[in-house]
Amino acid sequence: MHAVDAPRQPGRPALAVLGRLLIVVAVLGSAAGGVWLVARAAAPEASPTTTDIPALQVEAADVEPGSAAPVANTVAGAQGPGGRAPQPQPQRQRPTGLADWAQRTSAVIGVPARALVAYGNAELVLRDVQPGCRVSWATLAGIGRIESDHGRYGGAVLGEDGTPSKPIIGVPLNGSSGVRSISDTDGGRLDGDAVHDRAVGPMQFIPGTWARWGSDATGDGLADPQQIDDAALSAARYLCAGGRDMASADGWWAGILSYNNSVEYAQKVFGLADGYARQARAVTSG
Image (tube, rainbow, N blue to C red):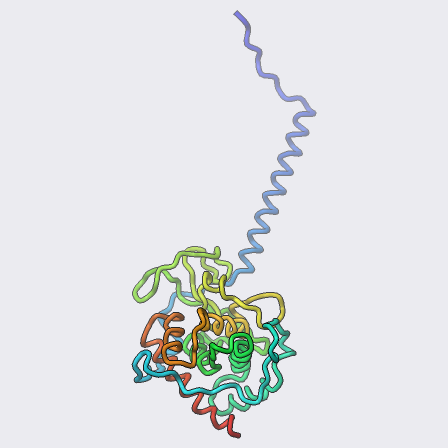
């Protein structure tokens, strides 16, 4: 029979190595915790659940789906990129005359000039790179009014940099009454919610949709759904998908219903877009 050796107690060198190993593990654990905290701090905080919407009092236009498109009106007195492929442009290099048009139009229709710059820029870019779409600033303004009151929802103030003073984040898409159920797709990076997706920014993009259509309109290297220039250009590209003609009745309704599959929603956007375009004719002729 062989005797079983008793376990040996670790000597001082082994204890020293073990101690150093424990210190390294503790440091790595602290570093990992620090990274997690930084990531959480950088994510926007999810807003409380609410049933309020910015355009609750906006009347739906009395128009049948597919029967007509809003009256045509384009950005007046501004020149687009001149036939070049779309290149992100710093805000200081906006199309010539756009800011002046926005100021004059704002005085007539009551939409903030800073928001009109974003809608007008999106129209001009798409006019240059996808002329068959014919998406109008007025349609983008109608959507912007419905979705966030042009970046001013919940008491936010739209800054000159095009970013609301606080993030605009919608209700959780958790399948409750009147709400779709969409599980989290971005780990809460854009909406601060790691359980369900929420629409974000002035044009209310779902994170999964933003991942495909998000565009950098300002040239800062970042497509940010909270920045209204980026959001408006992304919305225009989304509406123009599949070669859609947003100036035709069929194309316009198909585009808006793809944005939000609700006839009442589309009728509200129609009424706003048509009203903005008609009022802005005074700017075009003036």
